Length: 187
Image (cartoon, rainbow, N blue to C red; front, side, top):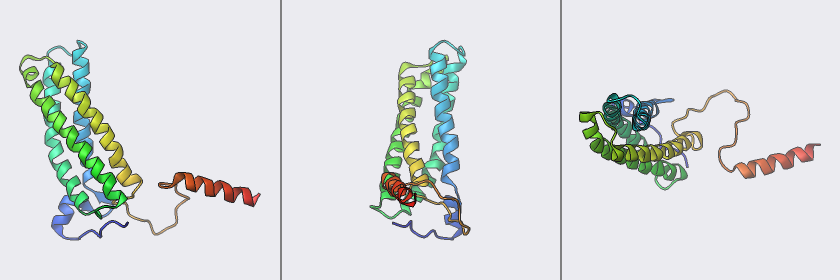
């Protein structure tokens, strides 16, 4: 099913970005980067590296990621609301949304548990475990987010000039079967 036609108002552009340049994907880089940094610093700190700085750096990265998650989530929600409900694209985006919300909740709890580590410079077990589990949900959610763009073509502009044969995005087995059969007939 086709994606709903984007609006052109200034407010729409502020939350969605320009055609071909959506705002949500680049914002995800900051959020993901901070959450992954927090988990990595937590692991290094738990293994004895970085001294007292590990607990403080982990907490700061968790909080920084949560701050970055606000505009990331708002722009993602705005994009999600434009999708045709019930379509394959919408279902994939909904799984992405649920996994990302789960990740942010786990990271928020990790930040709360790690707050004592901010004060005394330690990496707390609860903060580290939830940061790692939250990062796992983040990884899986990002995979579904990639599918929203690369499989379903969300917010991707079509070019007017023909492009080389694109890799199949859906129905890969059928594509390969038809392609191999057609190649066999040509010989």
